[in-house]
Image (cartoon, rainbow, N blue to C red; front, side, top):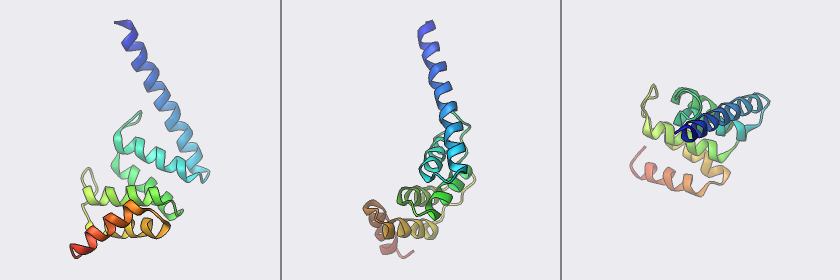
Length: 118
């Protein structure tokens, strides 16, 4: 019984260490770290779940022209909830930006929303 508990404690400490490292690197302009930290907040892995914080981090990295961040930002607006209003127009804009940067999956999402009239 002790082994599973030790494994859980170890995994949690790794997640907390990772979130601290990602936060430091994000502050220093490493956009990939902003995305990874945003995903931790979005999923509540090693940190308290905070979709608004993840949106802020995805926005920062999207402004840094990282297509993956723009895709995730579009997804946040597409889903809404937890303090974020569902907004298909903002989702389409984020997917469009990612598409322009070169993300094919974002182009697909952009055109789906465009065809729906957003």
